[in-house]
Image (cartoon, rainbow, N blue to C red):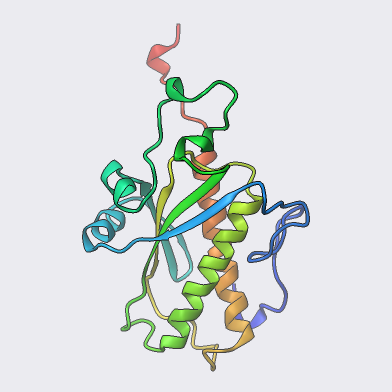
Length: 197
């Protein structure tokens, strides 16, 4: 995709633009929590985890460890046997219809030297993820850990760090990453052929 040709938001039919909530989304239904990843050990573990690529951005994803959940104030999920019958799965987190995510950023100054650009990426990711959590049909019971890494310099086509064109370009790449993650998480497990009759 040529960044200079980006003029309008690209969305999937039936979905709201990235960073905007759908008209059907009810903010009273979910407690959306985005918790910051803050420890070097947690970042190292995340960067060793699988990742998804979209242009200059890579999204690493992994499960939340029990010790991390306690430290970050997220109650570890209970087993289905401990869940009251009829209670939503999100009740296991001790939250009202909770959708949670632990989010971190790796934005090296050598590939993004302007602080205003780094702040733009962080803001676009937080706003887009919050909107995505409100409108996504489902979300993992156990809060995932997502780390967004900028792997190379943004296109030089964007002359200004405050360019609206740059903002749209970043939103499109982050939207692509979240869709890839959602598709991978929702993918049903592959049956083991050895267990078939």
